[in-house]
Image 1: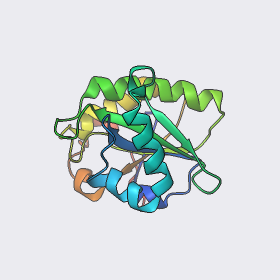
Image 2: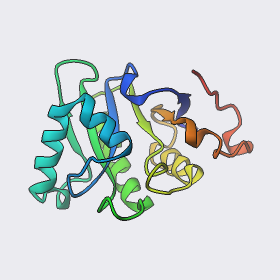
Image 3: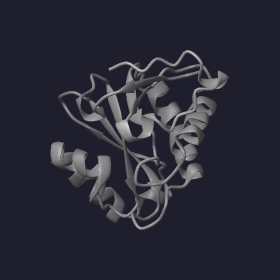
Image 4: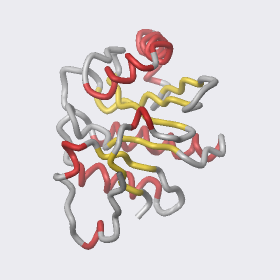
Length: 166
């Protein structure tokens, strides 16, 4: 297992980098993306400009760096349009490149939500399997579980020992 599940507000966590689930058209009108848009308006401006520039073809995520905590905000697409459900393969691609990025930048602590599980409709257990597969024991991202998703996670042997911290 390569992650710890924590209940809490992702936007209030003490990490070097946080991941915000987004679409590829620059709309942050609901869910965690909207909350991030309100808290970090400069991040939103940067993400929207990146999206409108058609840059998703070259990159699996967008990084916004700021001078205060968190130092990095990563926009990781979970779907191509806000109108569509989330795509687990798009998430896998983004997490694979994120793994490379955090290694290169020597980022030790980062947090992400259960990508695509809120408004995107994915099963949290499937997303946890992708996180485990991509980070394969090397990293320990903090996966913040939003209250609505906590009850949807299996308590089988694969997830034995996961501690829900508050």
